[in-house]
Length: 195
Image (cartoon, rainbow, N blue to C red):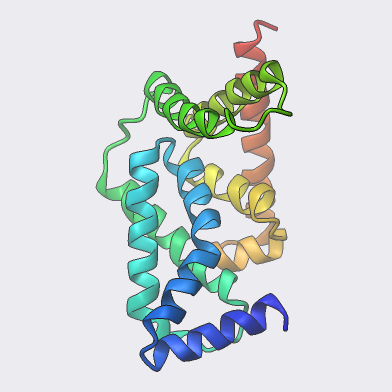
């Protein structure tokens, strides 16, 4: 049974009142939704808030899922809309410095989880932690529309056509936002490395 078929079975059972199926459906997708949320918001607390809003929206609207697309596509459509709603409600308070601190806190927690893994090279883990914190900070410096396109293209592996459909924009606009974001991220990286 494919992942999409498994999702469909869980959805049917959840709609029939199975709390266990709903829980399994959430568990299957929560890591992706959390990572999506973290990269868009720039800090763990806001990412958790956004993730909660996404799954609440999914729960309330699950009966509207028609199966015309994969559940994950529909889920990220809701996540996309909730991210925009959150950005509109909250003033842009995430500075580069606070994004770095929040990212550092999250990565520090993950670093502690990795302490039990003896085969990991401590220097490699430290380097990865620093790169992740810097990437989160740089993503937070992008405008939301560019962050969304980068998230959907790079981290969710959607095509420009899928991104265009998801965001109600043209594929060319999606491409423009993506490549503009990449140029901006490159400039931020060069600035951080003193190039």
